[in-house]
Image (cartoon, rainbow, N blue to C red; front, side, top):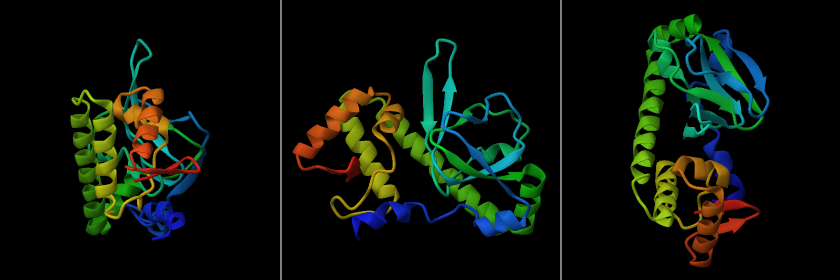
Length: 211
């Protein structure tokens, strides 16, 4: 597969097809980088699906420390599990880049999944895979060696998206995002990636990481 096509392949699969969402009454909202989409402690009122951009799911604590749960990007949804409960959000959703987000009101979403049960199955499957991803990444945090931690994350991402050939997979996260996911300093991640490149374990071309 040509490298120019790899990243686009990651972005064509939507959890719910856009045409179905818009026919069901969804709207498109634009967010600037660092703008909150929803905040911890608020009730869920919408289904959110990313058309363009990257979203950060996090918690911010009193000492200003941040814990990052993930960076969903194009085609992914987020916060969807809260639509089936009366629980308040336990996380924040923040635009990590400029984003275009498809929003469907909760009542319309519930009507949609009752009318089309297969859509609920697709959303539930996505939620289950994301939870599995979070479990795997959290287990890496127990590894002391930062290079092993980063290597395991890159391999897990590659396996998750179904790539096997060397350097066939473009890592869909920035160095800063990788650092946040791994609980490492950005400088540490940059150093490790350069070291892995010298060892022939990955390739870097125009800032993109090929694994």
